[in-house]
Length: 76
Picture (tube, rainbow, N blue to C red):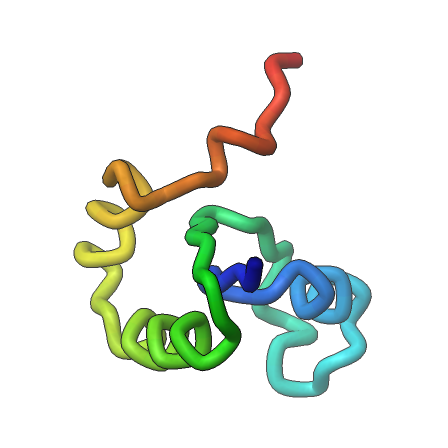
């Protein structure tokens, strides 16, 4: 199973630790969307489409049934 999301989890760590010059002053970053795919190609195609979404489209997507992030969130 491959996973596609706004930013990869390893990228979030790199962004939050200022390892990227471009994103070093744009954080903190957090995972807001998660979607599973059967193969890497499908995940990469979806990721490319998501990068073109507007802020409004992303906000609606976060609330949609496609978002699997709730499977990994814990009540605390």
